[in-house]
Image 1 (cartoon, helix red, strand yellow):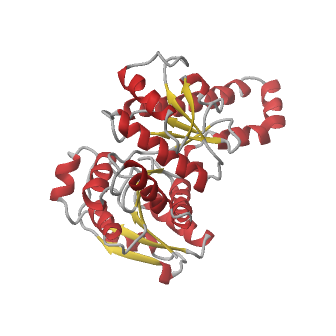
Image 2: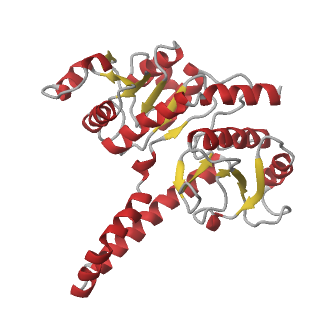
Image 3: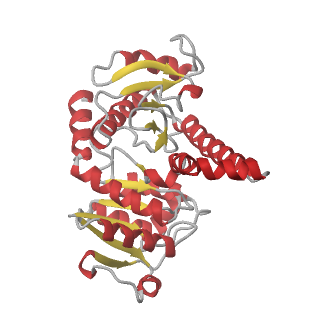
Length: 336
């Protein structure tokens, strides 16, 4: 049984969409147990009249809520009875396997490190979301996308190792191709961080390093694991989401301009649905914060029930494949 703590109060659509996602996950899998962490009376009100397995859905009362505009570290220290802090403590105390939240990114990142703690040997835990690509699995992993904006070369090498473990064991990609984001494919190009990291990745025996990758090659499946520091990764991720939304919106708009377009739209509707699904971030769950002593997953602030349920199922795969231990073994043995 995989026990997931869900922040019922985090995100733009809390608690309704969060709880709906939890109920879907419970319905889809008998091996998932969920604790909804948040204001008990509010949660009970949302659950009233709903059918669910009471033995697999628990409530952990947390009266306080950390808002998006609060200083993350200060909020973690002051609001001990918030849904984020209570949820992370359940993971720290090994009463749960994972924590999922659509709440304050800063508070989740700070709390993950301060409360759950890093695996021995891990210098910085990165956020690692999946993004659509033309690879065999249809997705690539971008690491880091928001946790460490001032990363060092040693951090990026560890990101590459952790990302490779995740892709191989959770996604089933054998010997995943690792590339570092650069402004050209030549080794001598790039800023100081890229130039320092490139030879370290090339000489790392634990990964399948294929060199630099330009941003335009990421959607074309140029690599399975895309390594970068958080500022670059976050810009790539947000641009990805924005362009995907713009393109799909433009296609719909053009199809609706004429009868011919509408008729053609009916013919291509199945293919268009497949394309829409590929660019839908909710299909991939959340971004795990890798390298912690327990699993912490950040989902979009505007996450709907689909993204929440997929993130919960993502936690199931993470535990089944024992990713935390595999990262610990790799980092401790190789980096000490």
